[in-house]
Length: 228
Ligand SMILES: [Zn+2]
Image (cartoon, rainbow, N blue to C red; front, side):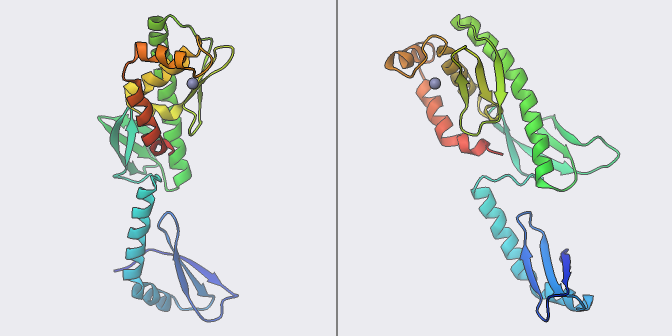
């Protein structure tokens, strides 16, 4: 079976050919400048089993590490639910990410960075709208009014409340279940009243959200999945 590969011919190389696999699973063959193509092809074919094995191994490793590959079949969370991604590329259609009927559709050529940026943009847009609405709801319920709301890209700081009562939330939180998001919002709103994490602060939180510890722990254990 033919393996697609990227060929790098080198004038410096004397005799040997070598092969490596990139993080995006592309096969790169380095060969001396004048090596006949047939020889390169048979070299790659001899390595077929090795290539397949290593691509598979690498993918499993990346999945274990929670690293996103932005390929079809991969799942992306939105409000706590994982939805599958389908990637395609059609030049006559506008590029970008669409969420439709419980599925992500991404029209985009190859390139992890570009694909990732479409996801970040999509999540940020959703986060902005969601936080605006839900902060409004909860702040009415709690009678705690913040100044402004800002959406950040923070990786581990889910939310904050400034001395002026400006609230900030990481767009990544939009991947978490709604009750977990509510916990973070309530937490930051409560800082309008209590600017610390004293026993009194946690008591106030518990009063409005008795199960808050569950959500806090969930975030600690699962937050690393939302890095992108
Ligand atoms: Zn806090």
